[in-house]
Amino acid sequence: MTVQEILTIAKLRLQHLSIGKDEDVLINLINIGIGELCNRFNLAIKSETVPVNPNLALYELRNEDVQQILTIYDPAGKELAQSNVLNSIEYDYKLVNYRSFVLRKPNYGHVYVLYKASPIPVKDANDIVDLPSSMMDALVSYIAYLGQSTINRDNVNEAGFCYQRYLEACNALDMQGYKIPLNTETYSVQSKGFV
Image (cartoon, rainbow, N blue to C red; front, side):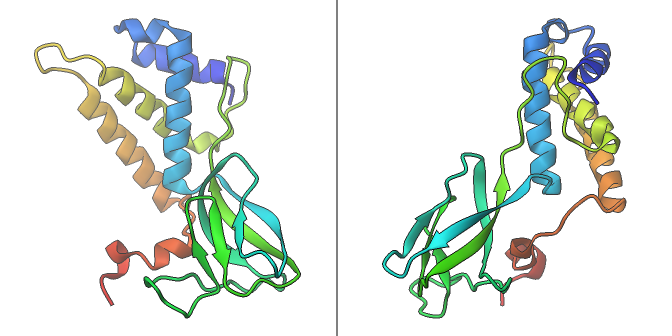
């Protein structure tokens, strides 16, 4: 779907607001909505091959779209063990920040780093939105929520309704299997509790 098609729908949902007439603002809201959906459904997952040298332990990903390192694999495809405990000696790598890591025993060769990436931003009305077409209702509902939340006339606006519609669209997408579970989510305290 093109940005122009989404702009047309967004303008209908926000026609009574001045923000609904400003295409530049709406394109920014589209980018925020795309980012929200990509994070919620893990749509922007990429990998980078990192050359490894035994004389170097600290590595940083070169790609500029890195949001978070998810996991690291050796050349055979085996997942390396991340340090989950402070000062633990049982690990293959430790995360330094969102794009850097330390290997405990680097060898000549390479590792594959799987990471969450920033979505590709749209810039004008002719750009293509890189989302499945079934996510457009959720995207437009989120745009409407953002637009509606900019007003507050006597504590009355439609932001709550738009956000509820967005959540319902996301729940429907979850049921259709669009959420891609990640390894890091299987160890989440929220889903598994304390061990």
